[in-house]
Amino acid sequence: MEARGGPFCQLLERSIAQICQPFSATRSVENGCVLLPVERSEGVLLPSFQHDPVLPIEDSAGRGGSNFSNTLLAQSTLVPGPNGDDGGNTQASLPQGGTAYIPNGGLASADEELINQTNRMEALRSSLESRDLPQNVIELLLGAARLNTQSAYQSAWNAWNSWCIKRGAHSMSASVNDVLSFLAEYFSEGRSYSSVNIARSMLSSTLCLGPNNLADIGKNPLVVKLMRGIYNQKPPKPRYVTTWDPSIVLAFFDVSAITDPTLIQISRKAATLLALTTMLRGGEIASIQLPSINLSDLQISFTLGNPRKSQRSGPLHQIFIQSWPQNPAICPVQSIDAYISKTAPLRNEANKNHLFVGSTKPHKPVTSSTIGRWIKDQLREAGIDTSIFSAHSTRGAAGSKALANGVPLKSILNQGQWTRESTFAKFYQRDVNFNRNVVGQSVLQDSDSEE
Image (cartoon, rainbow, N blue to C red; front, top):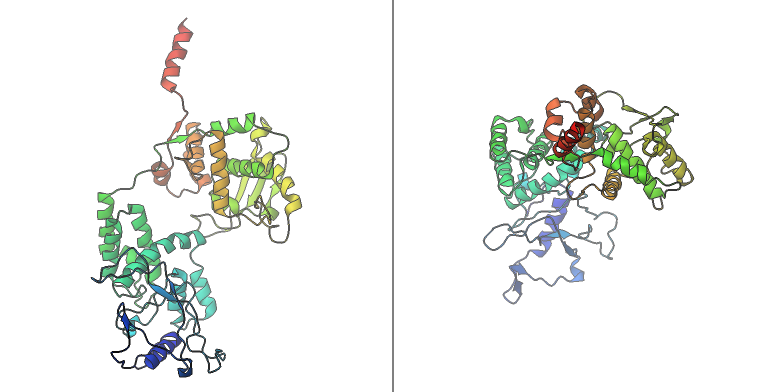
């Protein structure tokens, strides 16, 4: 067997060449695999195998199944030295987050020698490194996408990579037809238009860095028409028909105010008041920098640690919140001031730059998921149906209430960072559900006034 490809392929082929010799009929065969007695004196030691939860198994008919039982090399050392050690020269590691795909019949052709990887960022890194780009350039290119985008794209990448593996294709070397077929099948499996659109965006931003330089695949005329057909068949629906009234939560804060709240109580309250008065997302609240906070009796200002979701240029945003002296129990400025005082003894080198820290030891800086959990728990405690409404619903509830109270739409769009009025109207603006019969009360009120 002629060695070719990278170090991993070459090392694997040399190992296979040493054991794939003609065998006698006395040697056993089980499940299509030859069981060879490998002696230590032959100088070959095969690594152990472990199940890979990502790669699907093929049945005897060649159909991919949902029972994932393919295997992954568990040890990086393939051929130990004569004394059992690696000698420092025989280490061959799989890329982080990747798996080796070896189809029936051995290694694939030269075009398939790159190993399909389950980690999208590592697949991108491998592709960029194959271009001999400087490492600092590679890091900047990989840093173009933000962490929440990378997370959303990883889920779509898992489906795409599995789809390619079942067809013997390489996930970074796809054609337009491959993309069209995948998106159509992805939709036919019950995905929503939004999910398919995320997959389209992922492929567009990924394949442009692949060997085929498939630039702007998401804007390809055929892909655009396909997405239009998917939209016509299954247009996205708004998550909420109505929204909840923020006054319910504020009234809860008013009646349940206590003099010495616990850390988790004050954490939930401060995060919820921030979400309602600023319409910040959970990740944006988690990024607030403690050293940037300027606090006075009239207002509080602070700088976010990361760009906002729709921000593509310019400096980090600075947020201002006015105090509410009419009712200290619902004043966001006093709530944040109380939170800072409560967490002062917990500050250390690891969390001194972040406003919000964990409520339990070691009090690390919190993530967006923690902020979301705090807000959702607070909404549930205040009486909001969290089986319907998520923590993110604070943006729509606050924006809808502000619009109903006469706040100019432009101010709401600027505060919530909605670039288009249509986005706010389609996905966020809702009639506020006051949980009462407004028409009936109006009729009764008119009846009382006539007496």
